[in-house]
Image (cartoon, rainbow, N blue to C red; front, top):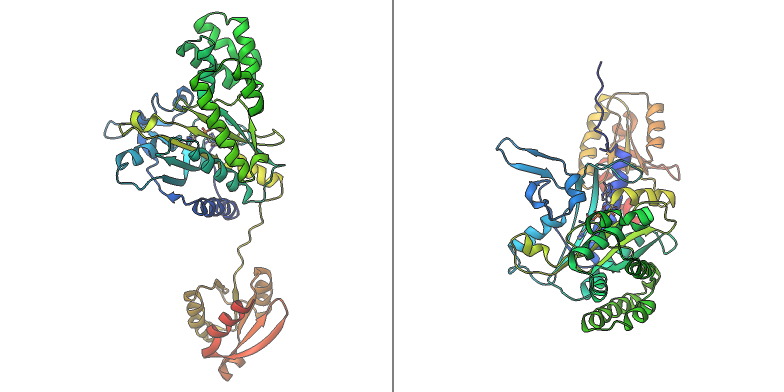
Length: 437
Ligand code: HAM
């Protein structure tokens, strides 16, 4: 018989897997709320044009796209950013500023599969609209760090690499490089860490040999790891744009320092991000050991809302993926074992006792307690074993003798003590027990 398997790169979530996923989502959601972000959602299927030329060549090549029955070119969303720009753009004037939004959703990219990368994955997206200054980056980087810290991860586990596409632009402009070549060089810089000198191949194919003096300057700039060195390097160039930009850098780093987050942040101009729409500060989070692919990535994209038909609206945001993040939590022993144990297990004698128990079972469930009972008549002894194995705190025992006396026996499965309770006081007694414990 043919067996059907999931498509490559797609995941199934058995209950224990889903419990872990829910645990992650719960903490992300809770953290976003403490920062005052509001949750939104949107369709999984979008017009193909939303991503064409907006997300960048890499994502475009990875789209799951098809023509629907109405002849529309559609795609499963590979990311949230263009979608959230449309949502915000459509109501920009009616929305209270600053617009701080988050979502937890599933995305699809036809990627080469590897550790921490699949073809469907979840992301936590957080974005701020309407704030042109680095104050928005402060808020978002702080949120990113807190989203990871809230699971017990610390500075020894992860860090955020901070860079700036504007600074690269202004620097290369000052060196006399024109815009198409700057874009070509940024593409090479994006790949440099992985491919070394080969990263410049695409550039040389398009623009001819790279001037060795310029290459040296680019590689020197790439190595800069602190604001102090950045300032010294740029002081020889000067100019208003660079001076203003360095002031933004100081503002951002000073604020993050005041929040006690400096230990998580590293200046690293090697990060320029592959997505096409980023315009300013960009950042990515990685595990400290450098064993995993990026945990999160984001940056400023001041032109995208307008490019998608909305008003001019500055924006910054980031997304954390669930796959590398889960790997990191598991590696560090921070993924809790989540067992779903009932609060109460009912042990029932025979059919009349079962019917008597049903009234209490229903009342207890309505009161919010998780209650289990054996679906079929099984021996008393086996039921006690099942009650102990279930992890329940209490067993309610509905035997013939008890019912004849108008009582139910309640056993504390931790202390193994028993009390008899009048039938009409079962729910109240269980409630008192859980309130006290
Ligand atoms: P991104 O860097 O493409 O950015 O993705 C963000 C994170 O999503 C990555 O760091 C990674 O953890 C996860 N991710 C991406 N692709 C995969 C995959 N194939 N399998 C597993 N995880 C993956 C964006 O998507 C931007 N839209 C983020 C953003 C929001 N920028 C501004 N606002």
